[in-house]
Length: 627
Image (tube, rainbow, N blue to C red):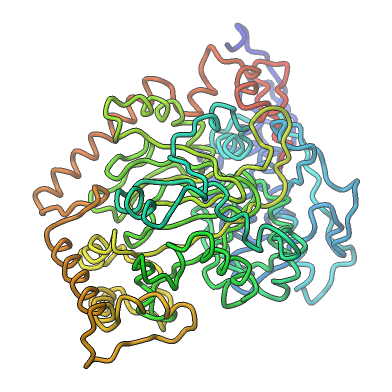
């Protein structure tokens, strides 16, 4: 509570404010750092508006002018997202260098005394390499400036600033500094079988046709990527990918970025963002064929039902369009620990498998037609409103998720699991899912190393079990078709359904998947009328009939215009009631932090010290030493 008698202070500070008030005695203001630091013209803006204005400022002005004008502007001028956007707009597509987090900005050599320790690191790492994007900007600006400065840029060393009361800055900090709670990792409800117990018939009948997730333990242990001289570790990957660049994106970033793997590893080691850039590269197999060789043959041997050459299962049907014509289907996924993917449904109605190679992955699934808490899709599915980061979802909606575990209807309950290197997870089509990257030993107890990377492989595919839904999706959800819009050689979304049907009927069943192996499309003789061809044509005809009848998965629904309006109103009501309930129960992370019964120490304890050191004063605020 505020003190009973507000103290007074003399407005003699030269940091912002009204010059005419200097020397006068004024009433003490609870937000005096902001009040003085912004002055009478800017203090009327909220912090989001202020950051929006600062996004138009160039790097030298932001660092040398804005951030040096006052304590509050120092905090605002070092907001990570501002520097990230400056780097991406200037060097995102052309590529940029990320200096070593413990090295000199001019040479990249390691120096143990450079990295600073943050007071607000939540106990998650001993060293907090602060100012990642500002350092990246300074390094690349120095390298590209024609007139070199007399002195090379120095790595940013943060200055602790107390007395800041900003939901905007605190929310971002809290959501990227959260500590894993043991309860988040304790539940394992996804069906799990060891590879020795899984046959093609069992997998297809009990899991793929039933559209049920399955964690296959030990399925990838024999892959070269997980053993022997070709085992994937940082040194091996850096050697194999030398000179190649990979695409990384973030839902919070305005543009994608091109990284060499060496630069991306440095980025992961120093990232302090709420929603870091996630390397999600679709062309890795073409750029680095060795990476494909490190798992493709092993996949065929251990999980033959997923092999691109497996005709028995009628698998990977988009391969009939050829490597160039088909939508994107395989990705190399790399990200910092505690990064991952927010809730989504996989594209184009496809199934998928996912294999972690380095680091574990925590998965949360919601069945088709059951929307996760905090996720609000439009009736058509074209747009989805949800938290911007994984940390925000865990901190805000975890209690609601726990309640969903006890849903009286068992079929609507969420499923959870932790996939480890050596496991392969089947992700059926239409299921909402979230993925959180965690370390090999990160159980949420004690100190854990957040530095380093998580590496995984994934493929999306079409098979006989989801073909009817895929065909219906291609006909009725053209605006949602992905993986082919930015590639000139791919079939366009408008033509994808027709061309897919045409290609399906032009090949025999036992050659459907072989095209993806050698890059040559194997078409059958049109004059040949073999039993296999008739059987395959019958399967396609059967799936066409099902597609016309309706959806086989509850994740999608066709709405009439009147019904669409009704559903839209219902969605708005549900969203409104959810917001009211959130406001009622105080489930918002900021509401929790500001509850009268919660002291600064309580909040800090809840997030394992991520808030930082608080001042002894009731209005001491939080220490933003992470800047």
